[in-house]
Length: 400
Ligand SMILES: Cc1ncc(COP(=O)(O)O)c(C=O)c1O
Image (cartoon, rainbow, N blue to C red; front, top):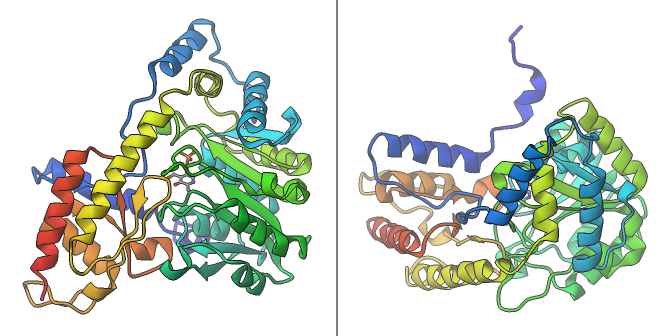
């Protein structure tokens, strides 16, 4: 009998982290690799948030807190939901965990019985399906093609729902495509969901603040209040406030669910860092004026990256409406030969080729459940984006 439990057979380490790790390895061997695989903003955490952490430590806020967040932080989160999303949650309907990832994990572990189904529109964030599997649920992956704007449409949702469906997972703006659901699009999905009261919605709004071209953000519980008591609205400070290392995510939802999630957390990690919680209060309650310039910087990078990618004859790429990723289609390259004569037969092959030949790290579309594509992160400087796409163009040209 081996040491590792069979439950681990169904999941894999996060592929975007794997590519990043390989790029770091190559770099430490002296190879000049440009990383376009990171899922975190390249901006620093704003100084007033860092100061709030120091202050908390000096005040002695270095002890256990209540399991799913301090009262002060829950109040700040409830206020954020009211101010920014017109969602009214009581503190007892708020939970705080060590990142949005842990929030999602708590929710699925607390609710899925073996075989319960979770509708996951693809392309999806790499962790969704694995968290479902580890919780003994069954991911029901619904492909949402480029032609559909990479978005789940009402008819496809209706077809995916069965008696066993427990959750629909939504993510807007999307990692990896940058697709953003409009109010009408969410209303269309909500109309279907109203017909199926046994289906709950987990909406992952972590890229809420990174929206381009003046687009407005909408979240489903606000668009359709009749869904609010079966929606978990997930968010966090990692992306908007450049706080990936601080590990704070939060959610608002029905009280019974929130309580069950706290039970899971109480027997796993207990409270998220007391210091990070204090910093998060500063993030949510403090000045917000740096958000806009940072988003405009991402937008300028998106525009430049699109221009360069679209100049490569064999790529097409939809315009991302938010987040900090592009998801080019590389179907025209499948079947071509590398200079050594071997064939590129998948987007996995292509991303390995780009790493070896162009020394650019991207993540293969297969990781996100919709091929043949790859994901480029623009959470890096304009210079590096230009250099990387220039190298990708040369590598593509070398294919026959
Ligand atoms: C869509 C999505 N949800 C959640 C997360 C995780 O965020 P956190 O750092 O809060 O765990 C990520 C991070 O890449 C993400 O892309």
